[in-house]
Length: 473
Image 1: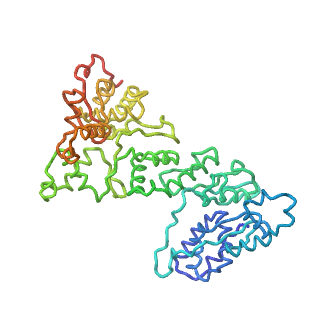
Image 2 (image 1 turned 135 degrees about the vertical axis):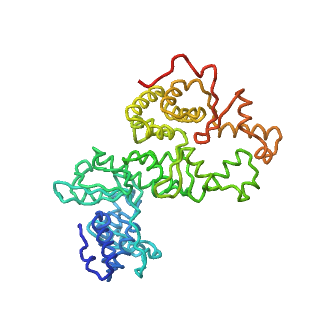
Image 3 (image 1 turned 180 degrees about the vertical axis):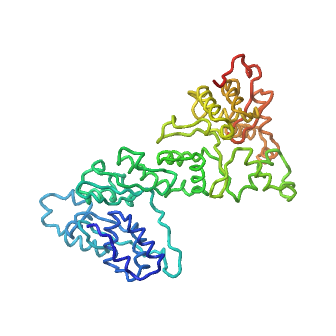
């Protein structure tokens, strides 16, 4: 069934259109080949622009496993299986299939009926000096081979049909073409991921089935984009950069833990600075007066708070210390010196042997604490104005001497109590110093607010300097 559609490259068109077609046809999957064969037979392209439109319509085509009108009639009748055996010979499935074709125009290709897109949408490419669309609605492309087809065929993820990865039309059609029964019977020749940060997929997986599942997961993650949250894609790209991501599994973990990162879009830096001033009760009139250079103040504030500017220059990002749940990668892969912004900066300026010693000592001190321990360490280091890896190791060794309070949950609880006591919401927002209130209710003599981790910190002076602290060996 496979067709390389070389005739498309001979259609009249611009050099850019020809190059676009060449790139798309190079990795055309088996499913896409079936759909494109049907579309091009039903609507023969006369120029390169027509062929481009045909390829862009492929996601909207539906494939039904039916090689004849009779098969199509049986397939379309979902309840046919419940019919009594003795009535089946009297059912005109051939006519039912023809009726289905009338309602759902398409074409038989091989053992499938390719149903054309239900509605003619606005063309994604006009062909008149228009920008050629990016091929961005995929996550992973795999070239699989078998003894019967050693040259291989392409598989494109995610599948279009919403089925489980292994049951998707993309996979079923590829296996049929390769004449094998399972993905594990295939050989992986080549793998491409839409995320460069995912690294070389061919070296990351011993099971093609696992790779297909993860590629499918990534496809749905990218399609949902945090259920439409603003700046989701920019934040995700920055988080991949921040974590120095190099595997698909780590990319999936980062995608489902984006709440563990604070993001300031480039067009929001002034508001970031203004919000910080509001926490110090700076009058709103002064903030909005123009007498404070909010851009310059924001730049210093972002740097001191451990924010990294995204390479794409779309904004700034840092870890906030919330628990990072790993469903795809093992915690052992985490480097404590990279997990805490202050430590990462210090380690980059330290000798390699000193950084290695600090890494081992801090990891030992935080053993069993998980992401919560990293978050508390960062907050404690900020409260102590930590300036060296040696000080960081000492703080990690006495982390139990600090008390930590979740700012968000405390403020929510305190606000509820004050409202119950009759205070007005506006009065609470404008007049209540929640930091002082936290110190008062917890009987802290002193308190530090760690905005980057969302924690209040109190150091117990009686315990802060034990005779024996952990040191770098």
